[in-house]
Length: 78
Image (tube, rainbow, N blue to C red):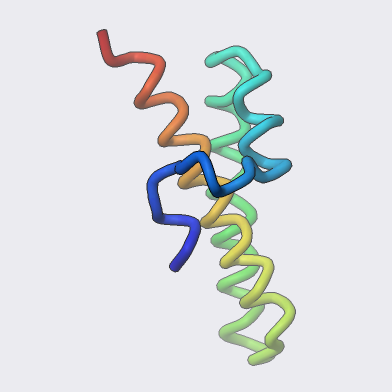
């Protein structure tokens, strides 16, 4: 899973990373709630339909959530 790797000079920042870095922490917390909701909704839909697109949406939401949590973690550490 390449999105779990540490940022390196060779790897360009993604659009999500750039957007998340530009937002204040309070707004990131609401993004976290939205990401969790989207992941749950898409997983529930996938369980009913077995549609690959909804599973992919859940995966992308998980990537966004991970990026947000990494950013918040970096900001709160001294």
